[in-house]
Length: 369
Image 1 (cartoon, rainbow, N blue to C red):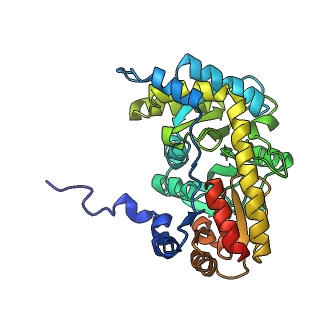
Image 2: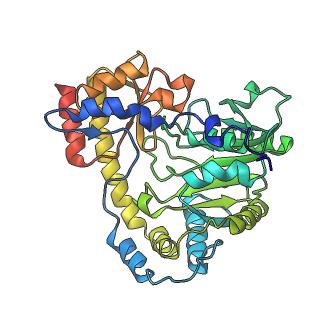
């Protein structure tokens, strides 16, 4: 009997190299610094999970049965309350917990039935998993920041927005969000807005896509995460909001695929979403680190662009990004090259705010020297 898939290339062959593997040599150089490595390359939280959230996780630890894919009543209510308060949404949206936000970013095109012949639009400079998700579905990827750049012949099925943006920290104005939604509805596309940095506005207050829908969420999804606001990256705690019909479709497929958020994580999410105080405290930590790094980076001759919100500084020495990566690695500082995020980022680096106060201070001293 012939294996029908034997002549088929593995799915991984269609994917780009995992970007962080390419950073290993620079990390080795930076780690040799006499005062140790300052890792500002990844947006991985380093501060502790608040005690109230850890306690909620522990209380729910005796969970022998399968969790609900749709989420418990408690977590769905907490998500809905937070969306009304934190996103400026109106009632009428659907909600669904997800296994962090990256999982949904990667699988959303597939879950929506997008396939070969379809087009997924992603920003010119953006989180690499938008492209990965489209490739996993077999779709064509087009990078465009304005819809006027699109070929009218493209069969656009999904448009990704990201505000505040990773890696740049750019914030999209409300008028731009409305224009994208109107275009997508006219052309039968879904708008997916990745808003996991929404609580981290510094110079500009970010706008949720849910707040510009006037209570009509057809074709609109907003993705959120508790990784950054609550330091829950290790819990894999996220959720998606928006068009109730689309949420229903996602739920139906996710039930079949076993995409369930663990019950203890759901209990922790419910507590985290109802506690604004720990978010305020974490914002203050990031704001302090941001001020320190922004001053030191500027004094070292780098230019910071767009970074009015979010968890990163988008910086340039007006040279190829890998030259800047190595220049900083020689000083024991590891950052991400802009090329990870698209060809338009080839003269920038992304500098994360996710290091301890002590390590941030060490980076600032090295930049000043």
